[in-house]
Image 1 (cartoon, helix red, strand yellow):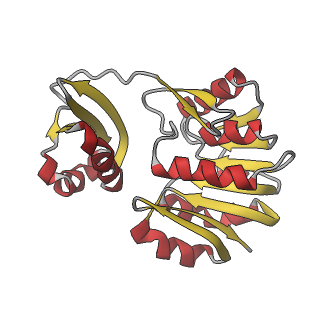
Image 2: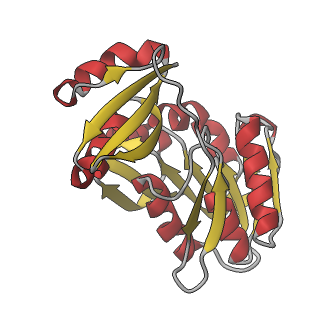
Length: 244
């Protein structure tokens, strides 16, 4: 993993952050310094060269070997304005509700999830989607490949007074049929998991693929099949609702 620092004006931070995500960022953390915003961006080694090329005009500095950067836990509120949930998000875990895909998924789940619904959250991160769905009365199963994310989901569920069955179980090992399956991950991950995503979806259920760059949506759409009931493109990130 490489760590890059990008200094921007505060009003540019959101736009530049979006570009960082699109260029392959694995995590982004903001710091304020002397009226400027410094984005610290974590990038996997194999994606580093392409990331630097994509953000070249913003002059990303490789600070992996020169800076000690503490990835602190942050506290955020997400969900309905009248009934938000509070999340503690570890520094290395994705899912604080601020990324366009997470925010869009929250809006979609608010319409799809009814009391008693069975929801599967694939790639749960901090548990933002899981906890909000559970607060809406759903029975929620959550999975993630990162044990830190699973632990965060469990803690956030308990802190908000709801039950979420979170584990590192692979999707291929998940049985049952869910009314809503949300996969806020990436285009490549959705493509790789497409068969199992459909397998665990109950008849008449809704599949919510998300975390997909707009330029790859046509590829994901073709691979998934089904009927796209909704397609939301928010700042170049697609979240959809697909049924059979």
